[in-house]
Image (cartoon, rainbow, N blue to C red; front, side):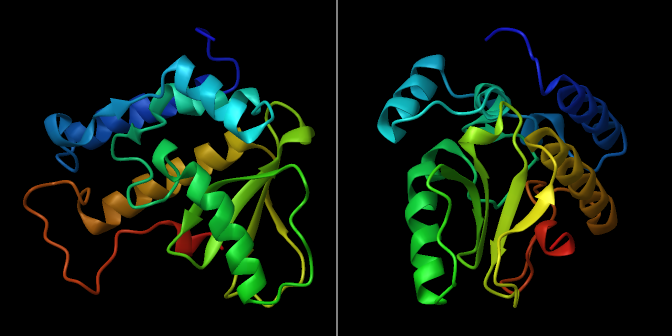
Length: 192
């Protein structure tokens, strides 16, 4: 999977926004630009453990920045080390909140946020599937469709991340920014 089929627009936007943020002094190349992709073997082993193939768009993400994606998605439980835990967390959260619906059998929870919400896709819905959300702060009794595709999700979160970095005055990785214990660098609360 050398070619980027689904994520090229996202990758181009990420590179362009990174360049602008570096030039603006809002992120530092040496601190904020580390991309750590998953290996093909890690992705294959994950699929073997899960018992199904993952959508191509998601595999592209893992092979781009599945262990760390620079300044993007800071603080989210969406990386390789979180994947299996996210599956369990989602089931526990639904049970704890007595949610009336079960997760679809082919749901894959690709991110969770501070133990109160998660996003997922159904692996049967194609190579760039729609994204659904559950949040215990919502009073809805259904899983909310939040993006028409995984690619749309990444692009929107990228745009919100850039907006947040600009309004905050920099990335949380910057050495000269210290967050107090009650401050949090978070773009996800804006979208749900």
